Image 1 (tube, helix red, strand yellow):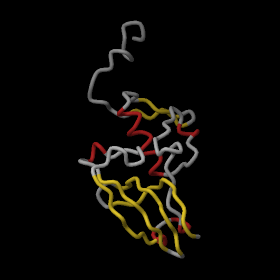
Image 2 (spheres, rainbow, N blue to C red; image 1 turned 90 degrees about the vertical axis):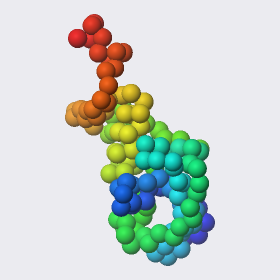
Image 3 (cartoon, rainbow, N blue to C red; image 1 turned 135 degrees about the vertical axis):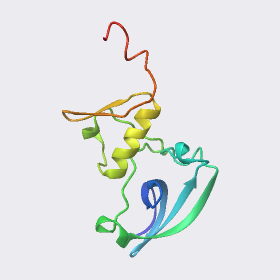
Length: 136
């Protein structure tokens, strides 16, 4: 396929999925750049802007469905596009769902829809702007 750049996810034994940048594909392999973050909480889809370092790696595409790396839902700068209703995710797969939920949690939105289904992520804190006397 040749040289191309895209924001993708890679399988990871510790984190399940990690963001990366695809730089080139050739046959059944892909060259990627993987941003290293200071800790698990810092791993986000930001195009690597908050990464402390980058790692170059070669990925075996036979480990992925149809030999394709799952795409990130990001803008042209690598910044995540977050969706309140995950039916709207341009790329719908496990990694996209997990990172969308994580970003909404970081943005203090504990509730996310998937069509008629509400997914609640326990924020372990009280949101005064959501749980006001008027709302109760």
